[in-house]
Image 1 (cartoon, one colour):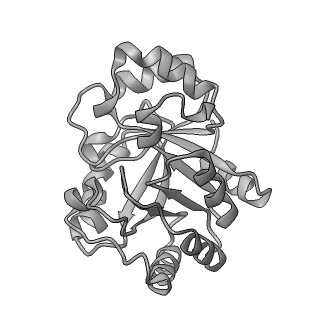
Image 2 (image 1 turned 90 degrees about the vertical axis):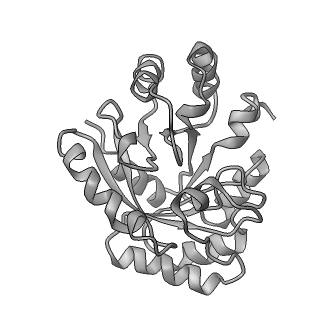
Length: 238
């Protein structure tokens, strides 16, 4: 069985940049899945993330199974709550929203997820999740009832990331939020990257290929694309 986290670490050591396409089950139409998988397979993506802030649909497992039958990329769960766990995936980002102070998203959901996770063989990747102010309220902020961190207070974001690393998180994820008006500032990505040893994931508000490359240049090890690809499956044909 592949160890996804070890591969992320190895890619960081070799300065090989990674790209995840985030699929929200609520926004995927199964009838169009063949085309979607084809577009992903012909993109530079190295991973598929699946999840969302709410996820009201019941197609999660069917979605994962169909993707696995037609695509070799590892599938990593990106859950908003314990109901979004499936043993059909390869791994799960075990998220703690360390930018917020709502105990449900710091530890309560994680505690409730344990009995479910114990019944699976999912690779569990502890992730410090940091929401960054992006110019508009995002689904993450609304659902988690937390305020994002000030995009201009880079020192505090660095401290938060370092606290996550000291707590034992394996990844730090800087998130502007789905459909964000502004992406995570490149200067923030650069400074956080320089001040932690673990891999840095960046997502939210990136709308073009130049934005991906700039995030890489600033120090992101893995970039996540969601809304931009949802809105245009030809995103990578730019």
